[in-house]
Image: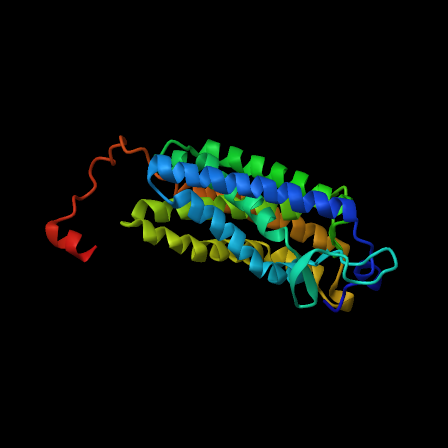
Length: 281
């Protein structure tokens, strides 16, 4: 966090909005958990609850994201003294608010709740997946534009293309991560033979979280942190659009992994596996 300006570290946290983010986000997250439990009983699968909890638990790795993307949660009072945040731990010098877990559930697990079954049954098309991606980007932008606009946290890096104070590229990356996680989660759901196998979603989430943000997002991360004369606003602009373009490619690729409807017959002419081939599989 060596590049962080002192005025960011001493910026006053808006206590009213801290309360709103904490209580409202946790109320929504708890409602999502209850819905996941209801769906477990109704459909006899813990898929939804595993997806929700996997997102919530993964928020413990949020400090890694904060360092890479220059995110700072405000923690100072009106005099600039730290300690104003309702926090549960700190890492890499970044104090973490306790609503990061509820925020992860809201932003990253919602698609599993409202579209997971549709994906599982092969009823979601490529066009539908892109529509969900767009909706998730809008949701992310709305959630974070408020948070960064009312002095709860900030992306202090030299970003371009901001919405209010919120970098648009972050919203595109978050929408991409949400879709990639849900598609992978549904693929796992289709392949496990026992409910316990769905606990692998706890490993799948960080794989897609950091694969999307640190992999697809690597151009913008590097552009933001170039040293001295190597840094330029033009490169940040270029990296912003390159990252967004890679996100489009990632969603297009993910659409190829959408389950097919069970009534669809495989194309004629494909070889039928022999019994020996089946054993090898």
